[in-house]
Figure 1 (tube, protein in one colour):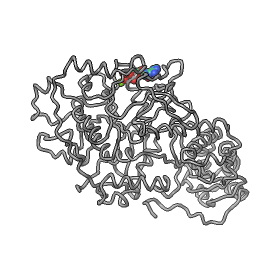
Figure 2 (figure 1 turned 180 degrees about the vertical axis):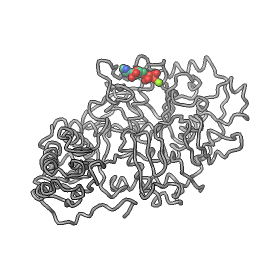
Figure 3 (figure 1 turned 90 degrees about the vertical axis):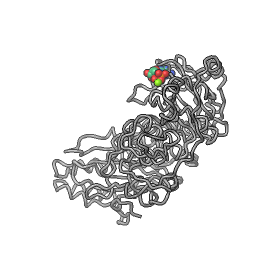
Length: 584
Ligand code: ADP
Ligand code: MG
């Protein structure tokens, strides 16, 4: 199966041995860099096999792609650590972190350019499936990384190369990928933490909840650019209000008590700086599992929760925003709305409609990052600006329909728009970082101060289907059929286009953005075929990835992808400026 990438090397070469690798490298000392291209593809070491999947063209290019593969008996993982997806993912994540540390401690300058660089994916606070370290159900382990093959200028440094490949990399493998070298207690905690988070999340739906925040959780982060937890002595630990307290049972930690957020419409209210957005952000991230010590290990959200925000200037390709915006001046078609430059309200309406199109079960909104005119038209504005002159049906008039007719919940931070008290099922006030349930008080306030606004909701119109056109999804650039690149989680270069992902707040690792870009390149034509509606196509892609792993999107055995959700895949496609869609 070709996906537009050059084919990977077939592993059919006769096996070479470790001693031959050393001899080869020493014998190439002083030769020109292209001599590295004559490396064999596969070498047998004592405890593992080393695969050389791609050799860089010169010492300044991206370092060479290498892979080590350990049999289950070499890796030595306890069989009970392999029995579930959650356990294997946790073990792989743990090994990834250990391998990163082991490579870092052995990395040094070994010549010009990137000579001696050692790279493997750097995981953040979340425990994601990644192609950097794979743990197979039978206990075999594979780690994929990059190494800069040493040279001075373009002259091979054979001694350095032999030390790198035959001593330092094997030492890193021994230190990080053998069960016997790891801290067994730390690994067990890692695995139990992930398994418990999974178990908590799996119970939400049956308990009628959309999110759960455990007592004792530590939600605030060190800074806007540092996702590690705020130091315990500066942070207020989460404590659930009695009325929302629930107890869930998990396999390792036993009974866990915390705040359950019921399905329906939930408001997070409170004064500025009292921790509303911090709580919402923890809930956004609750679709992922977290590492021990993160503080959000037991903060979980249903897997289909999607954060939506205003995003001026975004592209919109044929999205049906008509439930929120209709009768635009100039009579633009809002059932199939195109713009190169959405306003705050149209961008957020589009993001909401797209999340619904993909089947979200819970919308997450923060007033701080929302378009006010999409959220609310209060009585005074209604009196001054007639309904006929206002294209927007505000979210306040849709939020109950969404829940009652479509089972879609909303959790929303409200600092100023008290009209929402009328439409809320649950109101949680944050006061000095502690939550209090104030639903009854909010109802009482709503009774005493009627808003006098009229509901402007007309019946909900089923969303119009969109069929992405494959020729509008072009990952090629110059002589490359597929040229895509992630720059952090904020931006992806896709062929000639830039996809701005800065408002897609539930992307947490660059490796996810990179994987999404490659997945779109892979899916185009195959699934995004000009016939299937967007949701069908993306769901079919996710299904294949689920079954075959992330290697499905790229047959080169790349080590630099991390798992992503349907919603972020769709968010990226929806932001591709060249995208065109047909109608069903
Ligand atoms: P709001 O959205 O209510 O205005 P934020 O969530 O932005 O408030 O929080 C305001 C500040 O308080 C932020 O700097 C945040 O990191 C900090 N903070 C939030 N929750 C806690 C907590 N539980 N303990 C300590 N500091 C917190
Ligand atoms: Mg805020």
